Image (tube, rainbow, N blue to C red; front, side):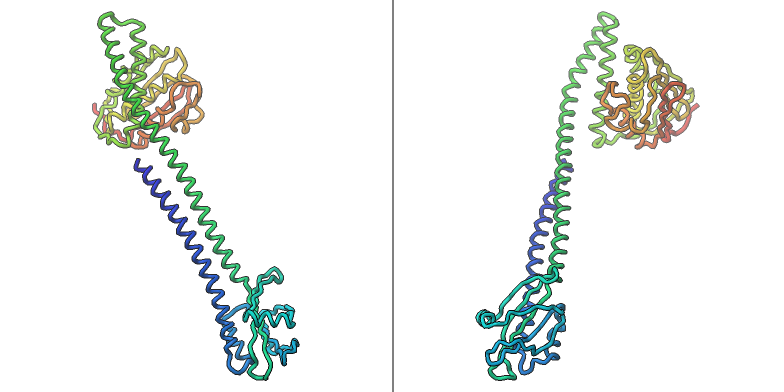
Length: 401
């Protein structure tokens, strides 16, 4: 549930981040365009307010802070629309013919500043046309053509667009992944809840069946059917213990204790003897006379042993012997069956070497977790037509003679 809440918070934060990005993008874009236009208008204002002379030097001083700017001035004496170049200032080397005629002059005079946007050699330009009375010649006017190269602005805008697009795309991808993870978390939570309820529902009838079978054996004695019932109950109990362990291992701290490995092993072999017989196999074992002590949780040691015995029963051939050997700190399980190919993969959750076998593929994944927790070295080999699972206990303490 904590992970679910965390994913909800992350999704909200990502959506908030996207919103801030969009508003920031719109603000930045508008700010860049506004500043760009304002700078152009400031230059026009300065040129229009030049006092007495329109010399190249004076105008060039104004243009120093404006890159890629083209300024031309045309003298219009006595209202005769001649194209006589008054100022030869051309920083952009842009060749554009002006339609200087009476109508064009009137349009500029009416609008005070005429704006025109055009393309030249795939570049974008913005032209301002305005008229100023000549301070040198009477009855003469000067037509200014001020052209700005918009390429830098377009480059900036395109760069910002690309960055924002990438950020928003990443954010949406992150939201998509988070939603998928969240849905999986919900499914896992629902599965856990289902399994917890199922375990609760199974526990009571399983105890009732076990108790009644014990009473039946006391009153009528043991027979083939009571042994098979007992075997079935033990298989269910072992599966029940596995599921309980998986559901509770993250919430319960299993205390370590000093355990005589051989005693626990004998106890679990006795527990599985009826199951092995009912499944058409035989069980033999060899336990070293020295008492091997290990420091680990008894619950987890039992799960490691039980799952290996259970795995041996499932995947060994009928009418073969399952052999268990404990020598020093090495515990081995020998079974005759098909050679195991995926020696590492079989320890993954829900993976089974042979699809026809029974089980959910959880047992060896539990063994893997326990081995990692206690630094128990595991190996799987195939020798003399037998699969051998070996576990070396590094949590081994001492041998007591």
